Amino acid sequence: MAKTGLILEGGAMRGMFTAGILDVMMENNISFDGMVGVSAGAAFGCNMKSHQIGRTIRYNLKYAGDKRYCSLESLIRTGDLYNAEFCYHTIPETLDPFDWDTYLKNPMEFYIVATDVKTGKPVYHRAGTSKTRHDELEWFRASASMPTVARPVLVDGYELLDGGISNSIPLQFFEHIGYEHNVVVLTQPDGFRKKLPKAWALMKQALRKYPAIIKAMEERPAMYNEQLDYIHEAEHAGRAFVIRPEKSLGISRTEKNPEELKRVYEEGRSVMLKRLPELREFLSIR
Image 1 (tube, rainbow, N blue to C red):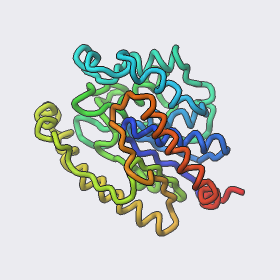
Image 2 (image 1 turned 135 degrees about the horizontal axis):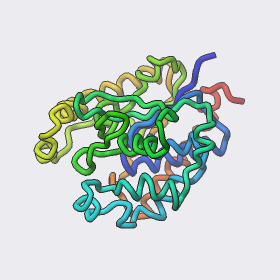
Image 3 (image 1 turned 135 degrees about the vertical axis):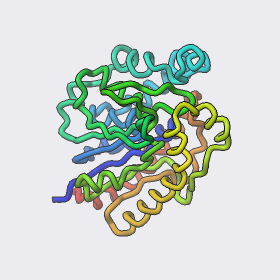
Image 4 (image 1 turned 180 degrees about the vertical axis):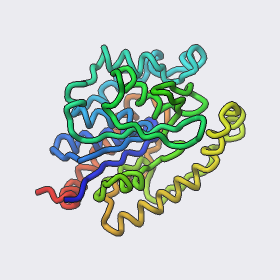
C-alpha cells in the first residue's frame, strides 16, 4: 500500500491557515504515514504529531502581542525578532505544555527542514532523534529562523536558518524517500509566483557574513516557482492533493492582531471542511 505523506509549507503567520487545516484533519481522524514541515510548517505542524488540537491558535492568540514573544526589543536585545527562549522553551515547557509523550509515541515520521548556513543546502532532521527535548525544540526554531531577523541556530553540529531558503515545499524530497501519495498544504493561492524581496539589497548587506545563504536566497524564487510547477504536475497526475487558500491571505508575516490570526485560522478550517470528502477519497478513507 502506498505511503501517505503530508507536506507543510511555511510562511510565518500565514501558518495560521495551516493550523486551521491541521485541526480539522485531527478532528476527523485523518492521519498520515509521514509529515515534513518547513519553517512555520514545522513549528506549528509539530502539534499534529503531538495531536494537540487547537494548541497553535490558542498560544498565538494569547501571546502574539506579548513583547516577550515577538518584538523589536527582542530583536535588539537578543538578535531574534521572535524571542528564542520565550517562544521555543517557556511556552512549550511551561505556559502551554507540548505533549512529548504523544509526540514520541506517534508512529508518523516527521521531518523538519532547515538550511545549513555554511552550504546553503537543506538539512532534514527526523523528529525524535535529538539527544534532548531542548535540541528537538531548537530544530523547530532553526527551521523557522527567518534571515536578518533571527540568529543562526547551533544544534547537532549544524549552524542553521529557515528551511524555506533552500527547500520551501519539499514534495520531491518526500517522494524520493518513498512517500507516493502526498497532501501538500500551501499558504499562497493558486497563481502566486515568488520574487526577490523588495528590500533584497539591504538584506544582502545584512547577510554578508553568509555568502551561501545569499546565493540560496537569490536562487530561491526560481526554485520556489519550479516547485510550484512540479506540484501542479503531481496534482494533475493524481500523486498529490493540494490544499491552498482561495485568495491571498492578506496577513503580515509578523501579524500580532488576534482578530487577524483568528480570521486566517478560520479560513484554513473553512477550506478543509469543504474539501474533506475529496481528501477522504484521495486517501481512500471511508
